[in-house]
Length: 97
Image (cartoon, rainbow, N blue to C red):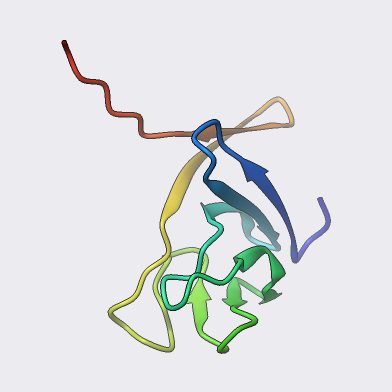
């Protein structure tokens, strides 16, 4: 992936996450703006700041904080990079029956 680019991935449950690459690294977040549900893969990236295309909300990809509205946050996923491969860590909850 090129710097300041993104790539969406669909999870088995149908949710979409988007992987972003910036100069400082890789970040994975849910592909949904917490404001109005816009697809974040369409957003623009400058340094580590993602701007949503619908209403211009800005998010820090490192911290998931919204710079436009402090009470909003991105839903992030942990990544592991091993041997040139990127692994997404999903928090899956299991219940006993």
